[in-house]
Amino acid sequence: MKRIGVLTSGGDAPGMNAAVRAVVRKAASYDMEVYGIKKGYMGLINSDFVRLDSSSVGDIIHRGGTFLRTARCEEFKTEEGQLKALKNLEAFGIEGMVVIGGDGSFRGAIALSRKGVPTIGIPGTIDNDIPFTDYAIGFDTALNTVVEAVNKVRDTATSHERTFVIEVMGREAGHIALYAGLASGAETILVPEIPFNMDDICKKIINGYKRGKLHSIIIVAEGAASGFDIGNKIKEKTGFETRVIVLGHLQRGGTPSAFDRILASQLGGKAVELLKDNIGDKMVGLVNGELLVTDLEKILVTPKPLDMNIYKLAEILSM
Ligand code: ATP
Image (cartoon, rainbow, N blue to C red; front, side):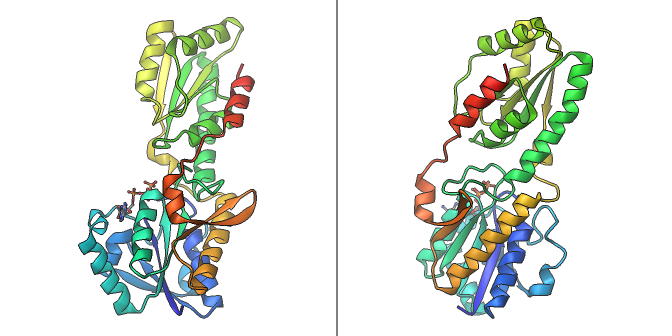
């Protein structure tokens, strides 16, 4: 393969730039040319291509977001849209693709592979809801952002002896809530994967105050409940002064952590190795510190379970 393309798709995640940089520079080491596709699959359809050489990806490893931009593109889900994309790829002589994004983006990657363009997926989503990789690019940075925010809230929570409910992202998954909850010492962690009971939560808060706790921090995954609903119920049932914070999109931004940069570099490099050997329709991930290559089809039909050992530990430690 002499010429490949790379795009970022779905929600942006810190570390996507580091992955693009790795793709471009690893490809250069094999004398392969790289085109960056702007705005995800929309750029494939609109032929929004830009030639990337090693120097054009300089000074981006530390930047959040994605300099290629990202988008959600309904048209690419249609046969007509995919054929337009294919024509554009052919016109530019692009023989293989790297797609950095979440599971929706991988459906697009499968479509490309099936139409004869070998495509490798790289997991890039702060939600970390992709199986066959311990971490997706962006998760570690988002986690640290949440923990930093909770540290700040904790100062006020303690000073005013208040209950704080903090809603975090994660879509249908509770990975951000669980890991951030453990790392920030939250009293309660609510995740979509595990049912919860408001009476038990309130009892725990009341008991905590009786034992002399100065504050209570409840982390709620957006997929489990609305932070405001939980806050209102706690106020109703306990009478405690309760404040609600929705961290929202600030979780997606910021300079990527060292971990995310290293992960992105490893996955980007491996993706190019596979394309060089004409291998497509796979995702590259990192499991137990080792690079793992998995069929994209398998990614889509396998759920990523919450780490129950971490959940149980967080529960014990929050007593
Ligand atoms: P995130 O987890 O951050 O939301 P994602 O990759 O899951 O990322 P989606 O919005 O689900 O985000 O998908 C991104 C894009 O992938 C879509 O806008 C669309 O262009 C493409 N895509 C999604 N599903 C399909 C499909 N079934 N066939 C072809 N392309 C698809």
